[in-house]
Length: 134
Length: 166
Image (cartoon, rainbow over all chains, first blue to last red; front, side, top):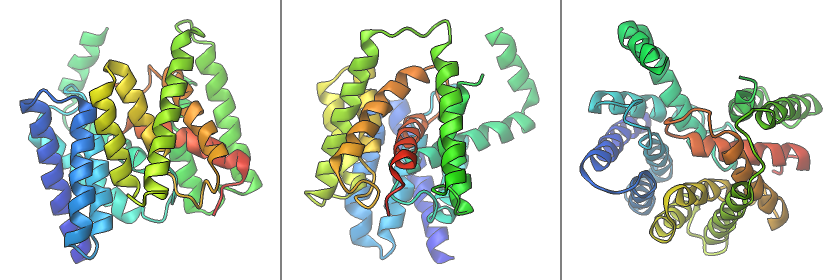
């Protein structure tokens, strides 16, 4: 349980860092994601016993941070996605083991869950966005 | 809409894997049927054309996959560090969409040696990843994790055909 809580905290920090990098630097989405994953992959396994898992969580969150500004508009959005992403990685550790792209799939799933939930709570905004698309 | 099936294959695969049926004949049939239907729908879209960009993406993705796999398994850097390195270096060398496709290939290369004991199926998955990037260009636009999902689609399809490894 402590591992999960710590994983969530690390995911939130990573998500916020990713969003900040997207907003305040001229780095491309690939650079932001790769930078976060590299730092997490190098540091976390050396600091924590469950550092390998935390690195996976951070990496997945860094992929989620590649979202466009239309999908994730604020820090709160990014933190929510990071939270969901941490849960999916933690509880899905035994799913698609060794399959490349698993972390990205988890990231995409967390973003889609967030989009679905946020559309339920912000139907007016969703409708207006659909109106703009039309 | 049926071409969305293709990008949903990893989610379908995950659901099947939870029930331990992904690499059974039934699971393989389901994945291959979904891939076939998605592929036909994607190719029949009016916006699709068999342009040189498809081959270019396939080759760039292949390079990303092989580089990451070698860095990860031969130099023991681990999948996360290897893919991040390939992504970072690729972003300095390549421009625009090419760096994105290379990063996609890096995700394919994050696969374990237990899944890909040899390079041949990984090469196929790398090439397939680049092709799928072009075929699913309208799917999940702006969704973080889209590249990884496309990579996972390529890997799952190849694993289902080759037997799944492990």
